Image 1 (spheres, rainbow, N blue to C red):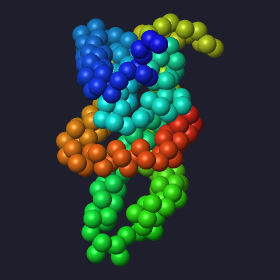
Image 2 (image 1 turned 120 degrees about the horizontal axis):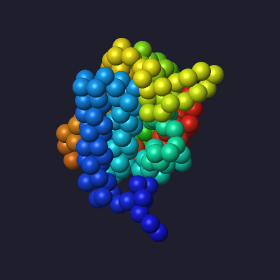
Image 3 (image 1 turned 60 degrees about the vertical axis):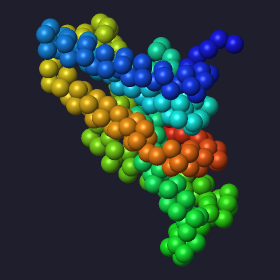
Length: 248
């Protein structure tokens, strides 16, 4: 069987994600050079969006290199095929951000509760269910997230959340001349269009890199605990599958 992104080894992932980030940075640099030196704002916008797409791909590969199983989620392959629209990658980012930001602290809290029985009276009902290995515990945690996903996405992506729903179409119009009920040309984009997309992509790139650095900087003991916690129940991965294929 030929090797592709969806079946390379965990060790390969640990090296390859860095190369993908380098390519993301390269697209970002090209975008700025085109916009600043040539006033090619449309093509610059396309490279900005490509930079974000590559970083989303790097995030998936990085997480699997750390021991998660994100690539096993049905539908995740769309993020590895350049010919497929990937406008749902903001959904993926919201889910990954939730997993890393909230589950890291949650797993640490559970670990403390397990090893410190005196703290059990401070545990929530969900925490108690997980400590007692009640299979409903993680399901309830995931359900809690699903119920607040719109609020969470608004907090994380803010005024930019709507942009990602048209990002792929914007990228195509930055590269090609098209005619759909009117003429679309890369030269139609203005500096203000470019500045807006750059602001959106900067926010996305900043948060993605922050997540990667956060995972890299936690202790090995904590990391193993978190990975074990996430991988033990398929409901978290089922939620990722659901969310990357719907509009949040």
